[in-house]
Length: 529
Image 1 (spheres, rainbow, N blue to C red):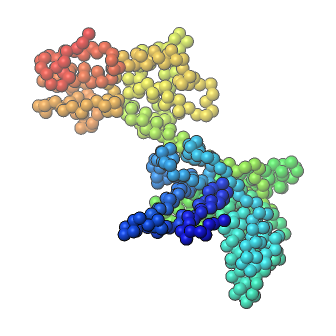
Image 2: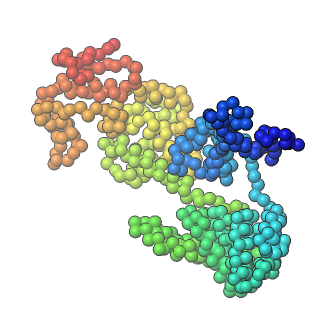
């Protein structure tokens, strides 16, 4: 009870708990103390209200990283040092970025509500808005919307507006009326289909349409065409990966029945599906090629549906198991890697071998591999010196022999010695001798950082420039010997400096002393023993 004896009795503040949080009523604004009447007991000072409590909500944190570099790391630092509560919301809990974030958060998981819970709430909302919604109709709406609450509310609003336009006062949603108008308010089913389910819809063809009317057949065709656009960048590759499984299942069924005519018919369907897949590839090449004619995209979708139509047959087929992801992507990545390694080998060997990449792969690499295999896998022991001499002869380095040559073995090659499986002692011996030896291959000089030192003065022609007929990179030893060289001392110094670049760092250098003994460049330094 409040005391009424004093007109300015203090006001009591009540604190009410609400779901574990304490919500305080705002404090009273008391009158300020007057300067003219400072001794009066009826004046009070102004008490400022407490500061408002705030929190930060970070939505879609599993999508950070696309345009936010180091955004997740900055968010973690903010969580560690900030006193303001931070609520992070995500859809993909299994994402790697969310896993690192979950270590610093209280992990709360929410499930999608069931259709029964959504239906009860929809009935209550309809009653509050003046609608009468049957419970079974509300459950059907929730199921058709994929248990999406926002879409259910949109359906109720669309239903209410449609009824009011007709002139009916209190709108009613019955189960029978819902089935008649379900296509008008239903959420697009394709939006809830992932790329694997969409691929299965396409490759199985017109399944379940035996004895159906034209409307159902047309609806199935539109559904399969829309399934292509779930991810039109990868759908063609996924169809190519899985359509033969459907045809193979039908052929196996015909073979079990012992019907030869049915086997021939299934093979013809497989042939038609392969031709349609080829047409799809030609069309997609025009779409992604130089002109990028994107007007052909609807034609690509129809051709993908045609592949499934032929693979499944008139009554549709069945895809056993879960659809496989496109294996072409991995094969194309391996192909790109092998092409890059082949170009490296060609670059290393082009000063000794005059061949393009295909000829090098088919003609030279098998023979060179046999030579190294006979030297390194010799029964009497590995011939290290001969192997390094062969490497220097063709401008190859250690990685070319021990790693790259194994990449060009065919999958059918089983009884072949692989350099990767070579004894570790032999590898260590080859590496040790290789690092102690100077390698003057021109390709290796360019790759491993030889200096671009100035050319010799005086206009004397180099050995590479002395050619017959004006061709480059062709050396005539007789003419080279006949040409006088005034800078012979500088050439020797350059050669010793070049050799030192390829010796192991920290090892002993056996470079010759400069003849003139002058400084400037590495030629004037004396060798250390």
